[in-house]
Image (cartoon, rainbow, N blue to C red; front, top):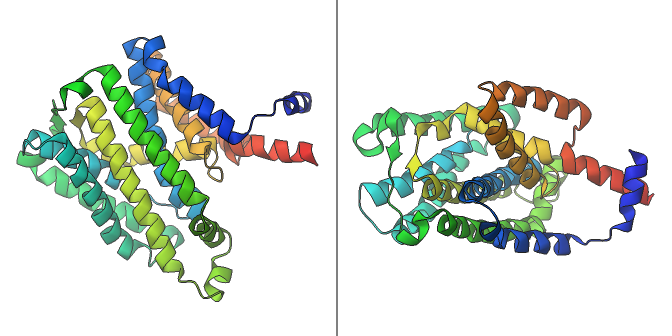
Length: 317
């Protein structure tokens, strides 16, 4: 294994070059792949955005939330209700999603960030289940257990290729914004809060305000991911609020590495691939995922990219 990493030192790609190369490849994917694989990558891109939004709290701020799916579900249902029930244009519905994502994350975060560690985690889960109960009880509006299907989208987004490009470019913009946030002085403060909150507090900064800002930003982008998923699948279901959905997004972050920006990107791609490939051959793909989590924690406690980053730093020394 050491020889492999030693050989990799001859490859001198900067992060920007690699990211730009991946961006160009994804721009031409619909021209190279069948609609089935184009849809697969569209779904993976949405999961990437959702995982990145969650990791802003988990990996960059040190806040373990068990209710981040609430914002994904709210974004999905807001778009579905406004376009299918209220018959509003998609642009208006998307604008409403931004507002709902911001307001809901601000309200929920206002109460949750007052607590830390396990209390914070369970409080976010409680709020998520509260939102679930509200959505479930409003059957005439949300469809209850049946969810909402046949959500109307503009003709240009009805095709697999059109939906792919829309999801891809919106997600790419969100990824760029999240990258700028994490690399900004604000992001450095979040990292300091994650590593040593007591020292940050002694320096005179209000930790609660920064934790709330991280929570709101994460919820805002999580709602966008939910709306994009509804545009892609033309449906919205209650399972978006479930603990299984939350466990999958947590697995995406752990798999790739929570202390690296691109870790959730790698993790989300792998999780979606496992879902499609294993789900095709077995009904127990979740069990395989569970075994994978155990192996990842034992063999790669810092995730795949965390492991590679650690190896790279050792080679430099």
